Length: 401
Ligand SMILES: [Zn+2]
Image 1: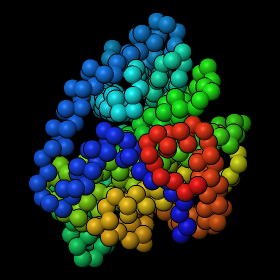
Image 2: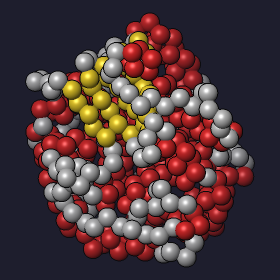
Image 3: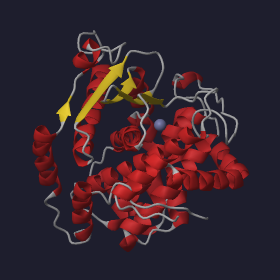
Image 4: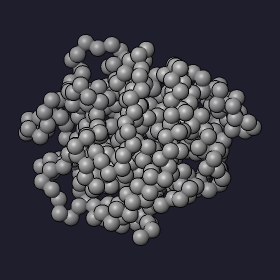
């Protein structure tokens, strides 16, 4: 498979590099003490350096409207927890990233809407990331633990060590897979939206305001937007990779095979999220799900086609694993089989008799040539795009010109 890469978009930046390379240097040495401390250290620093602008301020100055407040509503425990969890994760991640990338003021809010959406805004100098109130609820429901109950089968399906590692994760580590998958999906969305914030800030001639949202708009094709989405997906992907690595360091007893299992599950989480939209089942109730696929396209609509985006994610994720963790000796076929194994367990369990996984396979096969060609084209456009190029250069990221 041909791969066009620019590498380690986030890894090369100063503070993050310290965290990542510290982990890598110690990777197979057993003692892993400092990640939590490092994080605590950074949080302390954040309080001094970056300022959180809250939704009340933004509302008062008419920067945003339709603000959603869950605090005063009568809600089920699950819904309240979902809102709290998403809010906390977005604000924490934003605080850390804003500090690393010198975004001095940052904002997050939930918007009252019937649509499931995430977005990034720059308006009158404010850098805002948002999600709609539907997003935490739908996503939490779709990553319910009941869809991952059969995960242990991955262990039985896999021969030798990797199979045992799956079983160990579930039985000995008491690993909460569905929570991990949900967290990976959140990390991806945050990483994606944050990259849009960086793109807004790195164009030399800036527009007065920017607004990029994640729902597919049919009448809004713009090749630059496709390019920015391609680049933002890569950042989201790398955010997941960092999270997977951190999760691995927190296991009681680490092993390369357990780490591989986490890497596969992290990637599967991103592909599942994209496929929920591709098959039009994100909004549907589980007992009456029908598949309504988005026809394949390249230069159309606001975002690249989900298959194009999935291929970009798979490729970029895998090549970063190869680069950052050479000792793992990970093979593409094994990676692919495991990611799709998890997808199969998930969609079989979610959709019952619908054979979604075959659809995904067949579509990947059918459009493979077009998908690869379009991703290569987006890569070339990305490294020529002024905002992205500035980001790559300022972060010392190597890329094939
Ligand atoms: Zn986007």
